[in-house]
Amino acid sequence: MRTTDPTEKKYKQLTETPVRPLIVRLAIPTMISMLVTAIYNAADTFFVGRISTEAIAAVGLAFSVMAVIQAFGFFCGQGSGTFLSRMLGAGKKKEAEEMAATGLALALLMGLVTAILIIINIRPVSEFLGASGNTLKDTRDYIRIIVLGAPFMMGQFALNNQLRFQGSALYAMYGLLAGALVNIVLDPLMIFTFKLGVSGAAIATISGQIMSFFILLKGCTKGSNIRLSFSNIRLNPYYIGEIINGGSASLFRQGLAALSTALLNRAAGAYGDAAIAGMSVTTRVTMFVLSAMIGFGQGYQPVCAFNYGAGLTKRVKEGYYFCIRCSFVFMLAMAGLCMIFAPQIIGFFRDDPAVIEVGTAALKYQAVSMPLLPFIIITNMFLQAIGKGFKASVTSASRNGIFFVPLILILPRFFGLTGVEATQAAADVFSLLLALPLAWSEMRKI
Image (cartoon, rainbow, N blue to C red):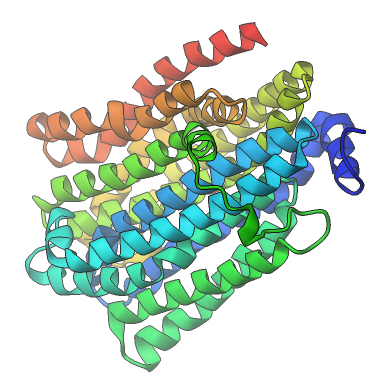
């Protein structure tokens, strides 16, 4: 007997239900979950934008630290999640249980270490991110509070991904939604009622993340989800190696997003706080648009991993092409809206003519490359789900690292602020040229 009930029921659902409606059903809660994560960042940006341009610039500078925390959380969650999903698909429940416990334990441990290291080096970290003069104090205050919640933040990202890869995206959605509501309610209270300013925004954010962590932890005891147990923790080379293989693509993607944001802010800093604020708002808007598409792709990943583990490669291919088509149409529509309403979108976050000017130009450049992103991101998710860690890492590194880093160092030298605004779009074009051959090579093999 391959699996036990109710695990067998989930196995049949993921391997026998028609692929397209299955992906849509799994994608709806993951899309909401990703949008909720984007709302965490957008809420802070919106409310802090009511304070000053310098304050919104400071939060934008500190975002790289949030991205680092998210990178390690996704590393543990995606790494353990892809493995346990394949094990469940192959009927190996014990290995899946051990990986789930190990992935969470590693996330909590890494969160603690990250918090200690950043707090000890808070000033040099803030300065490296581009903080100085008017933004240094606010950046430092925001980061100091945020990293106190790093273990819970990494833990909730790990749990969210593990639940999603088990096909329990609904539980994951509930946890993140509750955290987002806490964040949104506390933001105006902490910032304005209690007059805590930027520090209040940080308190609201970590409060929401901690709430999400405990709700997701409770979700692991529901239904057919894998039960977490200390006795199943296996911090040994085998499981750590599998986490590295499955999670390195996410680590590269999110980690390089942190690095690219820091480099982008430093480049924009040469043109003043308004330039930093404008690029920061553009980043939030782009993340919000991308979050829906990424959530849709994440609905495909458990289907891909389960069916790949079960040897049902036709379903893997069908799901991939379905996600590419749907995501392309969506991103094309979003690109049109961003191109037409760019000034109004940027102005919603900060009504400062200088910020709107920079943000509008940057958002329009980004809109040009938006329709290309499904081919890059869905391919990355496909490679990650089938366990092709190296190729997945390469595609992850391309958009925010391999191409972005040299471009952000070169383009501003020749084109000034325009070079800063156009760097991400240029990196996306080069990333597409890399992703397509990698996708084609794997599709021919399966």
